[in-house]
Image (cartoon, rainbow, N blue to C red; front, side, top):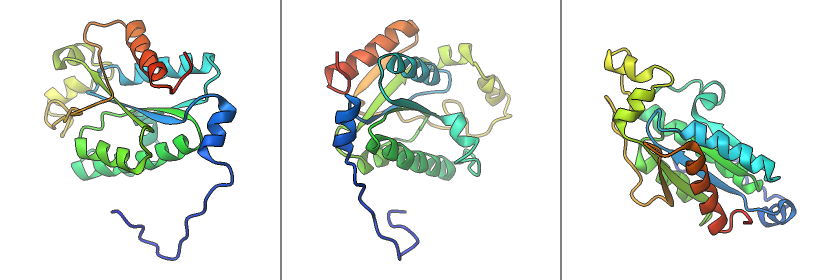
Length: 203
C-alpha cells in the first residue's frame, strides 16, 4: 500500500535536520540491513557491531527480528503476506532511526528481494546499506541456535526459509560477508572496514 488510508493528514518537517544531527554526533545516520538465512550470524554480527560502535561513541541501535515480533509486529505470522508487512513496518522504523542520525543495524532474514528493495526505495540514496550475511545452508543447520531447522525438517514449522520457503539473496548488496568459515572478529572487521571506507564512520 503506497498511500496512507487516512486522507486528512499532513507531513510535518522537523526543525532539526538529519545533516545537523550528523554534524553534532560526528557520524552519518544510516541503516545497515543484515539479511541471510536463520543461523547465518546476523544477530551475532549486529550485536558485535553495536558494541563496537558504542565504544567509539557512535549513536547506534539494533533492530532484531525476534525482538520486533514481540511488540510492533506481534500480530504478524510467517506467511508471505505477513513477511512482507513485517519488513514494510520495520523499514519505516529504520527510516525514522536513520533520519534521527542513528547508525541503526537490522537483523532480519527478510527473504524477499522485492521487500528489501522497497525499504531501500523509501530512503535517501546512500542511507540503506544492504549486507548479505552469507552462510552455507548445511552450516546454518549445524549451528541451529534456536532448534528451528530441526523443527522445520520435522514438519513442525511451515514456510521456513531455506527449507520449505524460498530465500532470495540480494542481487547487488553493498557488502557480502561469508560467515561459513570466517571468525566473528573477521566478519566484524569487514563490516567496520566497509563503513569506514564509505565515510559512514571516521577511520
